Every structure is written in C-alpha cells, then in structure tokens.
Length: 288
Image (tube, rainbow, N blue to C red):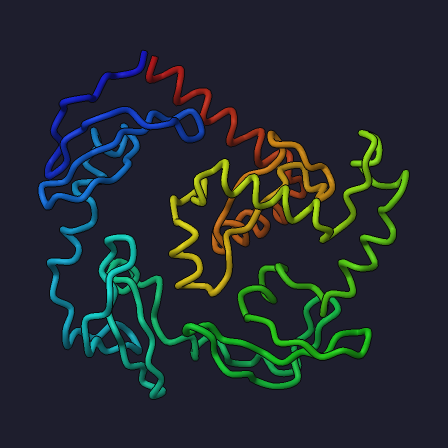
C-alpha cells in the first residue's frame, strides 16, 4: 500500500504533491526550506537519503581542500542545485567537479590519470595512436580504425565498448539488418540504424523519461555539462532495432556503460533486466 506523503516533512523538505512514478517507485514533489522545489522518491525521504533540494551540499566550503590530484581553487556555477567547484589538477589542467564527486572519490583528477598506457591499445576496430585534447576533463584519444579512417574517442567509451569503430561498424550493421533481416521490418517498417526514425524514437524515449537517467536520476543538462553528450537510450533486449517503448530506457553514459560491463559478465542482457524486475517487484510487495 502506497504511503500518502502529502504534508509530511522530512528534514528540510515538505511534500506538497504527488509526482509521476519512476520504475514503479512513488515520487513526490517537495518544497525545500530554501524555497526550491524538487522531486524525490518516497523511500529516499523516509530513509533520510535525501534531506534537501541539494542546498545543504552547497553550504560546505571546499576552497583549498585537496582530493587526490585535485586542489579546489574557486566556487563554480551550480548545476541543478548541485555544488560545483573549479579545481586545479597536479598536471596543471583545470576542471569543474561536483562537490559530491570530490568527497566520494569518484573524481580524482582532470582525467589525466586515465591516460596511462593507452597508446597502442586496441579496442574492437580501433587502435589508439595518439593523445587528443581533453573535453570537459575527459581523456580523449586519436584512434585509427580498421577501415583506415581516424577518429577521436573518449577513454571511457573505448574501455566500456561504447565506441567500437569510426562509425563503419554501425554502417555495416545497418546494411546487414535492413529489409526483411531487420526486426522492425516484421512490423511493416524498416527503421535502419541511425536513420531519422531511429533518432526520433530515441528522442521520444528521452522525453517519456523526462530527460532523466532511470538508474541514477542524472538529468540531460547534467550529462551535457559533465560528459558533453545527450542521455543514451538503452535497448533492454540488446536489439537496437526493436524500437518499442517497453524495450527502451533512458540512461546516462556512466550507467549505460556500467550496465553493459555487468552484462558482459553474466552473458545475457535480458537476464539483467529480468533480475532488476524481480527485485523491483519484491520491493513493491514488501512495501504493500
């Protein structure tokens, strides 16, 4: 049975209305003592996992603090009520980092520590031949594809398999899965890989999910600021041409890469989502 939270107060948050559920989890619109409004999951309110709109974090003065290779030198503009700090890396580069990422240790440098020993490495069709200029503190690499083209790719996309070629792999796959070989053709249409219809479907899923990662809650604005790209659309059954709403979910790059990394261990993407569904159902049953 769902708990009615309207009017309840949790730390600095007062629940003022019910919001649309996310993954069957009850969500509530709350007003913070600072005046901002934010949407929070009911379980996070009751457990104390979320105490404010994020303004509590902004009260911590990080100036002069040292985290691994980063020294905080100035306050930066907040993003979605999240405190951001300008840091100088030991290598000399500047990077803007979220306060929580500094304290948790998720961000240890401007990205330079991830650059070691990558030149000469090979990922799928790509061989790393040189270091490229960093983008938003993310290590970038100049790669030569097996087809002969050169392309610049982030280290994370290479290591997690997000980018396997200069783009020729997608073209090859698209050609191989057109016509009656394409899953979508069964339903009377040939969506193709990377076509206008495919892009429109991805945008539809992002809009359906309120431009928010369904795993960690990161918004598209945050993803653009931190990773320089829009949120990803993940196909649960691994078939990128199976474009139906129930088969797609919006994820940030980090969660998307993490899921594919975990799925590589268990050898079946469907097993992962079946497991998540069972866990979610068990949690719902416990709440009831």
